[in-house]
Length: 204
Length: 204
DNA sequence: CAAGTTACTTACTAGTAGGTAAGTATACCA
DNA sequence: TGGTATACTTACCTACTAGTAAGTAACTTG
Image (tube, rainbow over all chains, first blue to last red; front, side, top):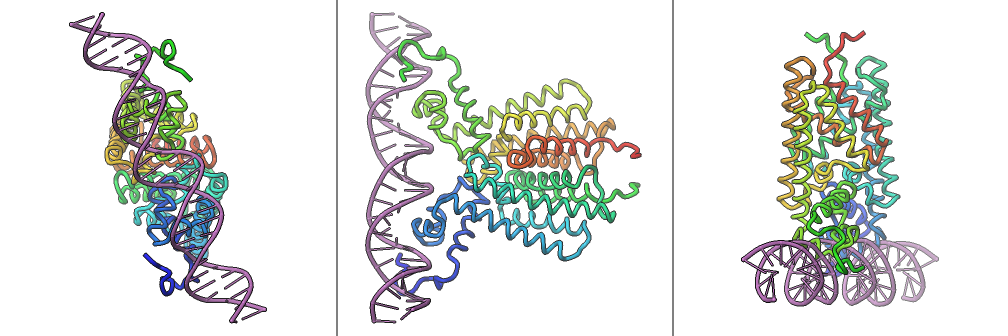
């Protein structure tokens, strides 16, 4: 299939790198880092594997780029939520919604997937994964602390512990939802998390 | 390395199959099903890959055997807990301890790992994974229902939902503990789960 | 309009994946 | 004692893995 015949399919200047990351990201989130190959990505984009190596010399490079972009996008979304100035419970809900959106696309969190494959991944990727969770839990800790202070949230233990519990529960229920129970499983688990951090009503 | 020289290393009648499963299980729980090969297992046992194929013709067969044995062991442990006749909170604690033991060995739950790789696994394995979680959540549901009835446990929602929340939280915190926060992360998450299902004290 | 630079291609490599066929040492049984 | 079953081995095979070297068409700049 000659792509070089007259002019390149996409203006060529535009981001082939981004398209590669798009496809690789989807494959990584559905099949895992060890579950897809350069050949898979190349075939889907109609280019050769050598073309891929031009953009990402090694698979470790691709992996790091994947996490970096994912972390950046995630961080931007968190900043947007924070900047909205909404109440803490509403911000927490929006945080959960990010995860729900990923799951709805049949994926799991990129870094949740990579966490499973952690021991098989190159060092650069391992560091990047830890940074992702760091980012998440720092943001959540701040939110929980602020919510507790203004009374819109209530929970036992430190904000750090709370943040850890939230990410664990969300990552875990994403993981299981794909194999067992579907998206509604995630929803009930997420609702429970939200409820756990809501101020206790007088209780009938 | 001649193993056939005089007599076989292990009486030969004894379970080579079991030894294969032992090694494969450890590799699967640390590196994932796509993260190890027949060559890895064979090298560790000092036999050839062809020897492996004698016991488990295909990797899918090995995978199914892995899950079957794991489920059986797990099921037996749950039965033992149930048979102890201990109070519901104590039984729940022992359930959590099973997970803690797995993590302490540097592993994550076999089926948690396989849940991540779910879409890449053969159909037989997928079914077996669902059965594992079914087993877990059925047992937990029964326990939660009994505990609520006798007042030793308290929680919102159905026992099924509670069971789902517990497995999600435990699987998730196992996953993250290996990459971020270590075993203590799991412990704080597990303690929080236990506390969530404890009857509420009068609260100072 | 020539000389780069960019973004690929073709054509290959070495290593590893899962899997198979045929042979062999040992144990078990009639 | 001879035959059969068990538990392997040696020696392959095909497909795929990440990765590389060298070539090339099209844009970009001096």
